[in-house]
Length: 624
Image 1: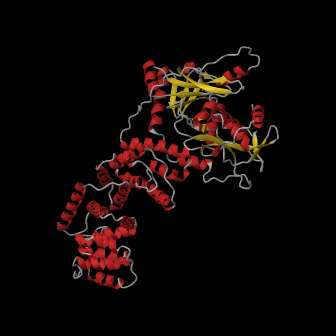
Image 2: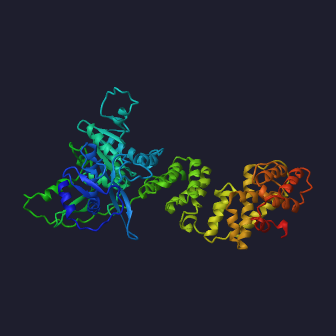
Image 3: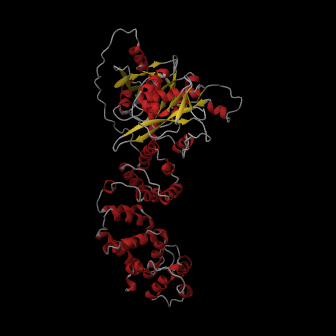
């Protein structure tokens, strides 16, 4: 097969399709020739089926210590790595390229990527416990097989050996056992069911296949959903190449039919080869419902399949076959529309399900710069998410295009579970996240009420107000009136001591809404820029404390303690604090007099006057 492929490669005059690869020249270990990678890749990328066939053949050769290709410079084994390439506007295709199999920094062709294979695998699956969909499918398959008379166990340990001289903690032990999703046996056969819902590396799939082959277990790969008309991920294409072009789907339809008939039923999708005039193949899809009894359990490769595409290809190419068959296009079966058959228990569970899909999309797109953010969110490590988002904003790292469904579910889970709220605000209000806001927030005046409900702090609410302002939203009058009423009642209220955190947050939010409304009505965009600075924003909230009579922006019990903070933390705005104290007629207050006099002295030194106009605009007590 390789010699035939190489012959085709050298005869090809196809245009160059790929613009990135890690190895410029490779050496064929069979012909000892040095080959141009461009020509090989251009030919291979024409066929999705042959790409996966070749990927598997090349990697398996390395695993068997018989590599098919070596780097033309350092003579180390290379393999075919997959990714996605964007070509013309509106078009994209999947590409493969040669890459060193092992670390080879001394090679001039060695491409240093930010993350290696193992790092990406760890980032993707670090802490990601098995999803509810995965667990549900596993349960349903095991139950159907048990009803049918098989002994089906979930996550039973399968091992190659029964004696481990190095102990169960050794790396050797870890290489010699697996926990398949479902282990199945009866008197005649034993096999394992592996459910593949997320993308993974070809090497991971091959490791599993080689292990089960060594342990004499046939493998049945199952997907929860498969749509032949759509572009397939590399993981799916790799599984197709390992299973003679069979994909087994276990969806809501098959769950229902399995229960009705008392046995496991799967929809098998398979590709039928069509021989063209140039002796190359094209493929058409067909499908049928199959049971375990309908499957072939191959004892050479230890796979389970229904239709043998490889045998059909061999038959069509057989020179002794004198009958030329005219294979027409097979009428496609009607595919039942996929229905979500698992109902999440709450908004958090629904969010985790859709979040995992977004993580898969991020990995597939290659945008690994932000992968840690969403992996940490899946793990509910909110402090880590906060830090990573801030870093992304600091270094102008753009967040990926997130689906509207994901963002809407993020709002729902943040509304129901307070621990998600701060992170939700960081994501929804990220300056580089471009989405159609009306599709996420429903495009009505309730948009501001949603923000008020989600945010516990004035800082978080400020971010939402910035977002809404960028999209032309105006704060509704009813909300302004409510916030103004809250501030009036707060100023009239008597009582001493520090406010509770909840009380303080509510007043601070009312304060920022009224301030924002004033700036909007006066059309002062430059002032919004000033409020985006955290330190300035905190100073403005604390400055408002003097006009309202109680400390805000901190947990101080009284204005005397607050004035000390103004002296220590906002010395460069001391002149404004002095003016506010005097305007509110608090300069004679004996409790704050000492810090007030210190502020007067500080105000004579270097001061920052950039916020003066903003302060005079926001606070009517200045009459300026």
